[in-house]
Length: 293
Image 1 (cartoon, rainbow, N blue to C red):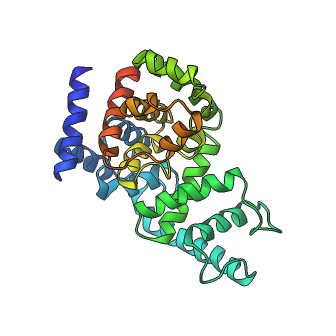
Image 2 (tube, rainbow, N blue to C red; image 1 turned 90 degrees about the vertical axis):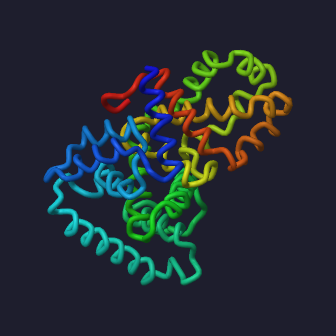
């Protein structure tokens, strides 16, 4: 366990100084050279180590099913994905749902709704909770990728993952947060309960939206590596670490609304460190994954 924690810190250090984890990067490159990519091994790698930026989007596309495991099909499949994107975009233009001034993430939401057959008669109607989640994910994804086609398909597939694989797990995360916080700092947990703050924590932002809009993209993508590869539980440990990091500030606030407002707008200057500690905390309580958790 100590070796795993030290290796994780070393990987983060390499990443921060620009070298990345040399051993880890070479291991990933070997995996990516296979004619047929091994999904299970890619998941295990993503759970154990931060993905190098140069390979992150490729790995995400494969794990989310946007690209098939077979290398030789990637170019053709992405050409088809781009064609689908243009077809849906053109349909929205023909029915005058979008204009030149429509924000890109809103266009992607309408594309998603049209493709899914939802609200087909009122695409531009009032947004519901699921729409707000999609917009939050898409806004964060827009900062992580460099083209509209990738942004749409990654946003759509990420939201689909939340609504299928994690549909039953996400509602359980607040209780898990309470449990692990009791192990890490029971005094803080008692304070949150005493001030009726626990039930008012920004669970929608943290869990339904996977911290989209809470952390800068550079920090968030390291958490999403774990979500994409099979673990929504990492979200719990990120929430725990945020509470631990800002303990003194939180305990000075006795008003539930004030605590929630602060947690929805945490300072961005040390989010990389918070994410690193959250990953270590996750490994501490769950062990080093050998498969998806």
